[in-house]
Image (cartoon, rainbow, N blue to C red; front, side):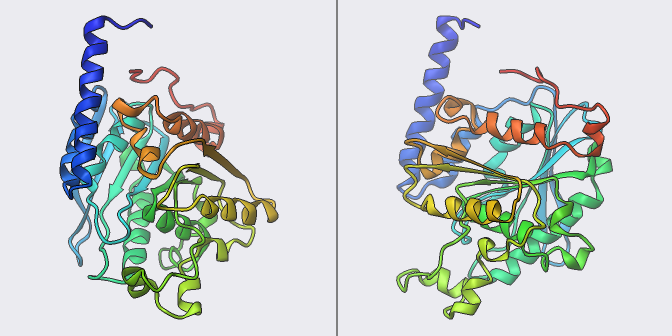
Length: 314
């Protein structure tokens, strides 16, 4: 499809605006960056519900992005990154709209951060969000057995731990194998020993080897995990690509369904920013995520329901 010169100019202008916001990010203005990304998304054919309380005891809320015609479709619970110390669900609206415009319902929950809580706290929040989504799947236009967990960076560690260590979902009578799949974007899966310089990480995960081992998804791979898609940029300087390689190797050794995609020259944030419209061409993140969801059907899609091929094409 050929775009008019005006449309190409607008696309370039949007990209430049977001690039300026990226520069501001490194000056500490993360809200400006994400506002720029979210200003470029589309809402046609999408129903949005924001600020739904899923954990009254801690005042935790989630946002939902769903295709307006969603019936028995897949659901993704997305956990954002931020080194386990920062981040807000509203910043990642572009993730919700990107997937919802292609037929996927997306739930983006908040979770408590360090130093308010340590690992047990934010993992309990994440498990509660997945359980809430599982039990509300029908009202969201989806199926509980068609539920995927997805995360970027620190959120990738949270999601991967839910998909490997059965103890987190057990209080809700759920098992990792009940998830339709896990999608990790530059996740932290195998990061011990934690350097002495990383005081926040030592505070949230512990200083002894046994405590740190509890935080490593790779340590819990035992052959009963859901299918996994691991996306990683080769130029990532925040989360070493060895994390994805290590988890992929552990899963493959157990004969598990795992797909590793290494994107040459792609950095840490670029991997998730590629879900936004201005940076869609920088990495095939959206295409790979949608394909993984499509080829790992739950019972509903096995009966003939598929993701719409031309849903809200941009």
